[in-house]
Image (tube, rainbow, N blue to C red):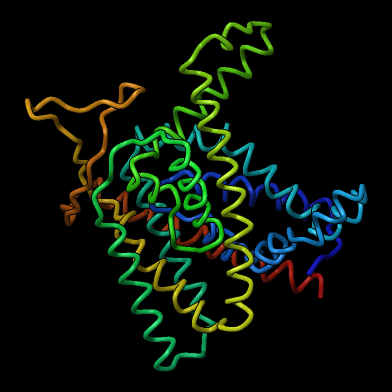
Amino acid sequence: MQRTRTLKDRIFLVIKGLAMGAANKVPGVSGGVVAFVAGFYEEFIYSLQRVNKTAFKLLFNGRFKSFYRYINGKFLTLLFLGMVVSYFSVSKILDYLIVNYELYVWSTFFGMILGSIYYISKDFNAWNNKTILALILGTIAGISISFLDPATENDNLIFVFFCGIISVSGMTLPGFSGSFILILLGNYVLLLVDSVNALYDTIADIFSGNFEFIHNEVRIRMLKVLGVFTLGSVTGLVTFSHILNYILHHYKNITLATIVGFIIGSLGVVWPWKETIYKKSIDGSYILDSTGKQVIENYRRFLPEWNTETYIAIAYIAFGILVVLGLEWYGQRTRQIKV
């Protein structure tokens, strides 16, 4: 599964990591879809499942080069580098775009998911009773998840660890949005906004020589939450990769059909024309989170009116589809050149 990479390959792998990281942070969008469409999903799962007993033996015995080669370290390092950079840069831009151009952002994502469904299913020729049933069940599961009501925030560290395990599901299972699951669990703002901002502020303080944050109980608590969340994410990433590698090896067609179903079901989450419903207290006032933002309760989806805004949104849907088709074209062209 490992292969020699040119400088161009490495740069594009970091870019794919950027896209994957940004997708993971957007509710309803799965980073696994990016991996699937960009053509490195199976290598990603293969590399993660190499983090096993053998890898740890190599590591603890001081055989660092062997450990690095064994886990396909160059691939994982470049990909995760892109994800980390995305978390503190591209995703910030994405946050701004969602706040100011929400309809068009969701339209683009909707188009990308439509393109992903086409990409994954176009060469799938193993349709039978089992795979059709898997498709239907995957779709029902995806739709059902999209209509659940979010819970309230919970910073219990055991629960935070569980959230970490669940949140990375979107990286390993295309169509299953980990960030949307965090919204349903009530901890999206806590884990992907508050704790990340706490880390950002801490790094800024350290570089400026200000260490007063060590006396800030709220900051220290947020850093603990982020640490436990990260530990849970790593645990989930490795665990899911082993399970999925086994499933893909023994039940590949059923798994692919289920993934297509998940992605179809996720269309309900990213439907562009929706109104955000915010939580209210008994007296009718809006409930705010720790950042002062209104807490999301759910979304009300509706059919669009035919006006200029709708036509522009449709153009962005078409753009999203073209982005995926462009990735597919690039992937095919790259493989043909190497052959």
